Image: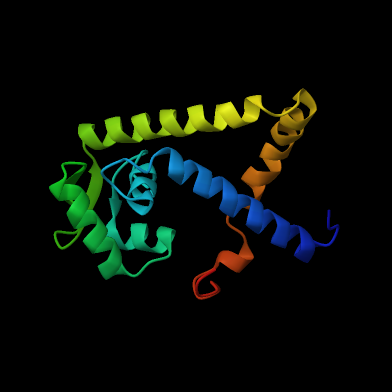
Length: 153
């Protein structure tokens, strides 16, 4: 295993890609895309504005608006006027959207649990020990400032 940050980043990128594909395959039969499921997850803790969702997911506002339109038509979202800004709309999860998110997470967790069961106790323990570092990697840092993102990254 690489000991440099660059080497580790390349290995981690490949491993994360494979893990994401495994999770997507587990729920490929869902009526929404993986991107739309990720958007549902972003709304789990409360309504958000379209621009904030677009920025979080690394897409342009019109792309996010299109996703949200399809999701609203499917009954997965709520739209409410922002009380502080009449021009703005807050997007939230409908009960149907919340149920779908819970269902998908359960299916994905079950698939991953099957794979984890195939590992040794030491391998599972190593993954458990690495989880705090993964959480730290996901925390915003100086490189995450507006304009510092790498296209396609």
